[in-house]
Length: 183
Picture: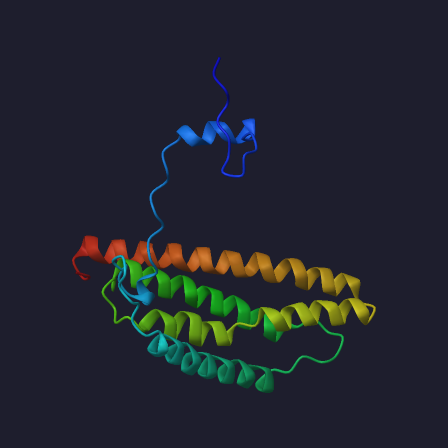
């Protein structure tokens, strides 16, 4: 009579988990190209200081641009936060364009391009933390309709912006290649 296999701690395995033992492992996730090449066993990673510096400098630049937008177009207390909505939608659209260009047109861009522009500039420019504070402030200020509108509209518009801008950019790249104007 055979006995069921046991786990290293001596307990019987969970029957719901046993079917997974016979499945092949999924392929490993690709390494983020900004972090450098995959490491061989025992190899030390290269310094991430340049990546962190690029993100910090880009983030500072993006935050300054966002601050400028809020100074030029301030939101009166209790009103719909249009500036933050526009900043987040524009930032998400720019991210869609950037990522489409980096993957379709310029896949061999310098290593620090994406951390500087994407994570840094656009990460510092967009402000989903301010969006969350605006929603809470509107709720607390007795404007639940505006709060709910901000909550839903910002997410929907930001997702549509990144998807639409990415699609439009990729379509323009394909059209340009078909016409021979892009390599």
